[in-house]
Amino acid sequence: MTKQISVCIGSSCHLKGAYRLIEELRQLIASRGLLEEVELKANFCAGRCQHAVSVQVDGNPCIQVNEEGIGQFLKEVLEERG
Image 1 (cartoon, rainbow, N blue to C red):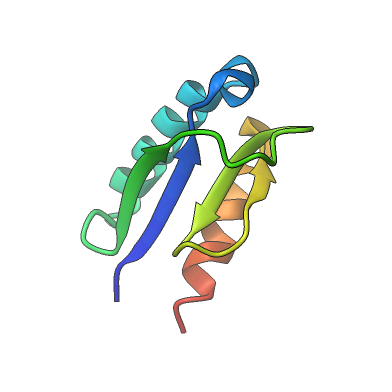
Image 2 (cartoon, one colour; image 1 turned 90 degrees about the vertical axis):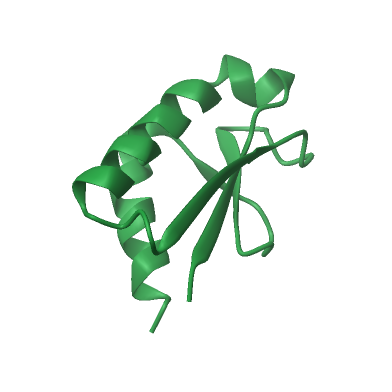
């Protein structure tokens, strides 16, 4: 089953580094050979941008992710696949 990761690119998340986060995710997904398992998308304001970039996985409630935590985030997302 493919995991869908949606990264907010609204104004606040953009200022918090959304595009850098997307690029880092792209690189991690490719380097780990996960292109068939993870679909990366962008979306607009999710209304949860207080501290870091808002990210949704499979449409579930937003979590906030920063560049320092992106590797751990991806690991946790993939572990959820079962």
